[in-house]
Length: 493
Image 1 (cartoon, rainbow, N blue to C red):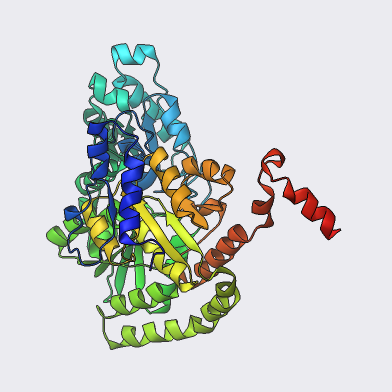
Image 2: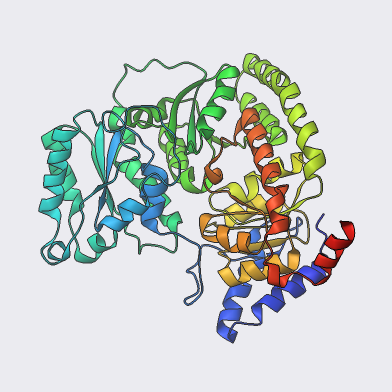
């Protein structure tokens, strides 16, 4: 349970909102709430997926980021053209640590930046011819690519380039899929619409490519991993557990994913969905069109791993169910040793989270396995069905915040005084300068994997390394220290 009462949390929210003008205060009040596990639908207590308030510092990304940076970018054997000025492609390249196997520049291209490098003349005269020429050159220079996607940046939508026509013509010329993605950054309210647009592009340009292909040999145990972007090797850690159960993973995407895997996904018996927010659209489509059911899972921390393994196994026969129990038993000594080592050092520590995708709720269980308490959480671009899934994971009277502003987050932290913050790169250095331990939970702060039993050991180590680092006691500026400190040091000597 949170150390703050419901009344104290409500008072804190009102205190933070006081700084805003009346209209802004009314708007932001809808995005801040006190968790109540008795509420069945989050829309009764919190508003989400709305435009950010003008004039505040939001931490959201754009639709282009949701498509190119999240969904499409990690598909390793396709080349993804950032169609527009060079900056968007450069800043979305290789930042999320989507690990993959392959030879970069030969048969994998995930960390390369392909851009049409728009200049003023392209804005005036259009970029269709330039785009066509780029794709012809790509085919000459990188012949082992399996296809191309065109990731539209803001100017493309503003000037009206017909990327669909260029894609169709080029696909005929090179005899490979060319996928136009209308993910201009100004679309929607956050990167969430970019996920949806990217899912729709997969549906319209990829999924049906092998509908009439009977060469793929299916088994009763075929599954896919969707919405795992293999950050730090997460998808590999998850795949190991599924294969230990006796399941065959026929596709994983986007992390370390290929075009062929995407095309074969409808042939699975079950789609396993990791990031609900970014891949629920395509999962629902495959269920409706191909009859492939989907299921969410959570491989953060041993408690949630065991729950998910049993839930997945229940979909299959008794052999898989028995194997699931064997897998859990196999790793029990390993994860218990991790808990025995780190829980005494982390017990009772309080955490505030503010992340995207699924992490504001999925990683709560991993912290709880280590005896830690999550006292505040929120989504950058969540929808109400994300908050529906979060309510039961959080304790009553804890803070929940949607699209929290920079000011609000800092004020909440000052009052709640968490021992650790898990958020993104934009917030990292602010809180570190405030002397608060921080983990970058978008890309695991250059660590990982955090999924699976092996990942839990790395997760626990990283939390301990951050929280119990002696640097935090040295971070206060000398001129801010009390005059008593030198006297106490002298007395001790």
